[in-house]
Image 1 (cartoon, rainbow, N blue to C red):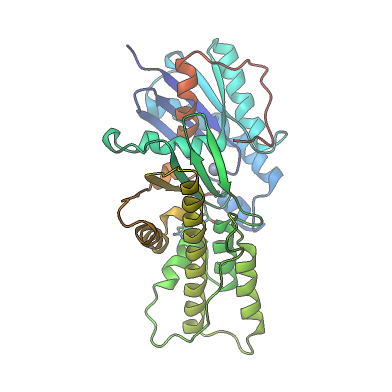
Image 2: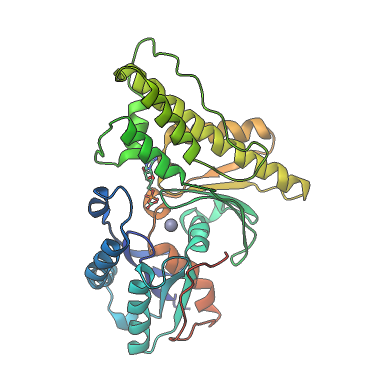
Length: 353
Ligand code: KG4
Ligand code: ZN
């Protein structure tokens, strides 16, 4: 039978996204309009600036998604959008209004998708069929917006095992990079900090090491880590030299990685007590591109259970960060059983996964 083709829209954070995906795992287009440069001056996402940018960019993103896929709206079988979580009077409404209106005008079925569930289901699209992660699998979602450890037990059931009690790991990379006076660079502050850690310096000063917060508790916390770095810098009598900054950056990155590993292993231990033994850990989000972190995670899993050969899966970066392909893919199992939403469907600001 002919495959089902979905047009999907996503605008829950700062990227305006439109994509075309099919039920036979084809990504026909993936349009992401970034607005990072608009927010850099504010040091974070500015809500009204973000809404205005989505409003400006969404129609063009839809046009390009269809053009790149080389199809017309008539070839679309269903329209998907991000229903939540997010700000309902804000960013979310731009993508959802566009999706609902397109679906209604063309008399096509509509499906509203949970943003985190979509992140968690991405590996089922991006991994070769013979290496698909099997349920239950763990997902570590590490970005500027999320610091989450999720257990996916089926296409519709996810459990949040850990989230951050304060700021995200990505934001802490960004803040520490700023504290060290690093420039934004072409790849962003986090990637610039990773690169800075690799600087070849002789005899780096000893800056000590930063501890993992709340040992024994399955929660992340990253604001105390960046505050420790801030205190270290402000208590220094003289401006830090470059070797000193590199040492501090390394100590930060090391502590950030140790926390991720510690909480991941704690998650494994708690699940093992209930006889749940995941064979795959999917790591996604902007921070997942950090090579130092990837190596530490591999070591942690090998140390935890050398025989289990737990696989670490990293979807390609463009599908780890916010995108509409994951929204279209996550809507597919509902379209295929005709489980549609009404055109009147509401948004969900807070929505348990
Ligand atoms: O998923 P993402 O692209 O977008 C949002 O969260 O909106 O994640 C961006 C975050 C930023 O905080 C960025 O500094 C961080 O991911 N990041 C990194 C690296 N590349 C991006 N952090 C550490 N090391 C990297 N190589
Ligand atoms: Zn996201």
